[in-house]
Image 1: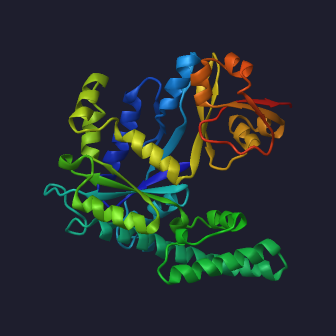
Image 2 (image 1 turned 30 degrees about the horizontal axis):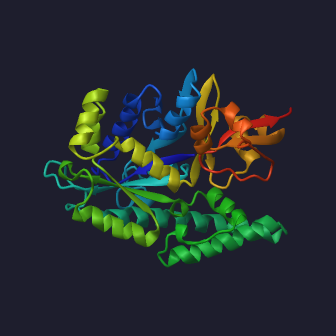
Image 3 (image 1 turned 30 degrees about the vertical axis):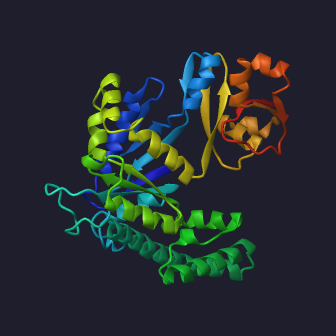
Length: 363
């Protein structure tokens, strides 16, 4: 699963991307960052539960859950028609699972706004309009092919035609496709079409250094908009984070304290992106490693096992599960077993966030 960072020019998008990835590298040896390509990065999701687990099960390695971030080329008005780097922007955003939209909420005479004045709601509307226009074009182009397949008696194609028509009617009225409800089969069709306004969105309000907590009026406007569309807002000062990422651990802690923050923005952004993507973590713990694994909310035990290796899902027998609270109470897995607090779950078990697991399987 990956999230694409998007925004208009000069909103601080790339500054934020660089700061997040650098802070991920500097935060701790346990939270690594690696560059895949110049505009892509994998960042660890900071999780205090890992520290608690390793207190009782000391491992050789600690591996947190990860999130892939993609710094997508900036968009301008007319991008859906190829203006600026529109085509590149649109092709990349179709591939990500969620949109992290950076919205400028700071005034700076030295950084020109593409529209002339700072108006975060207008910025959001420009990008949403361009994505919606591109989605309409995608739907228009996809319909004839789907109709031809449906005429041949293909049942799946008939469903595809209905989905395309419903999405087109909704988008024609200016509505974003994420406001529609889809069955699992319909959602699969929508994902296959790469419809961008159907993807979940997280707004990142890039604030001024004088308002690092994000209490200013511009951020409040973004929060009001986000509340209407069921999205989250995370205030981040990209400039502050860029400076923070260059400091050593002691100086970083002091700088964070000076503005009333407990951690770099990486933590809050990563966790909010996790929620936006509908993800959660479970853990495996042993002497070799303690590791966080990323799964969709609602994943079953076999599906969770498959994240480790496809053979684990195919040959799944059962899952042994215990909670972090049980580990804190009984101090070791051995004592958890002895107290009868280690559960044995089968193929129908739906994973809970924070489960600590052993999977039993055959090949």
